[in-house]
Image (tube, rainbow, N blue to C red; front, side, top):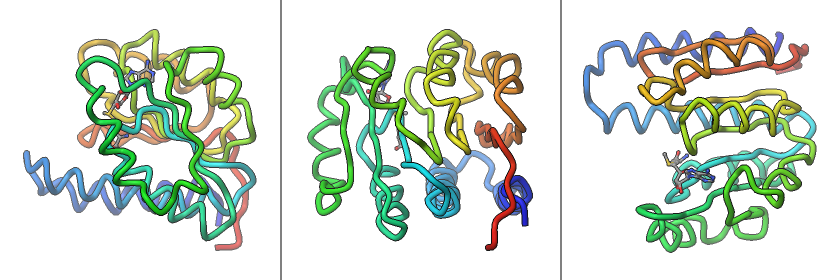
Length: 195
Ligand SMILES: C[S@@+](CC[C@H](N)C(=O)[O-])C[C@H]1O[C@@H](n2cnc3c(N)ncnc32)[C@H](O)[C@@H]1O
């Protein structure tokens, strides 16, 4: 089955489940992370590591680490933990305890030289969930465009991520969208998988 088909089927399945959730943010948040884990498990079977730009407490990071461990991959986290996110760094350390050995953390702005260099490594998956403004998403997409699967979270906000998604993402590959769930998926290159 092709990578695009696998991702599309997963999205359709969750889209149908979540259509009934209404505004339950708890349910949305749980299923979002299950989706990310599923995508990570698929991606980890491809070449390269898993990257998360914007990790906050590390709730998703721990799931990416579980997928990475199984296939001997690493997780690259880029987060600045600035301003009102500053206190969340301690929580990140707690939540990812036990996985430190396979998580590389760049504690810096995603547009810094340090982050760009780190992100230039081979990546199978990149999750963009940091600054959702148009300019920032555009730069983050550019930094991870070599990843096979790119997930863009927060494509709903009025500051620009929706525009970024609509206008920029198609340039990077095959796109699938879960508009209600505010997520966009890019398969930069479709491949056949023996899953
Ligand atoms: C929505 S939270 C991420 C949530 C996480 N992905 C999850 O699934 O639980 C956003 C994070 O992005 C980080 N962030 C915001 N702007 C950033 C930037 N320019 N560079 C790096 N990190 C940034 C914040 O520090 C915060 O931790």
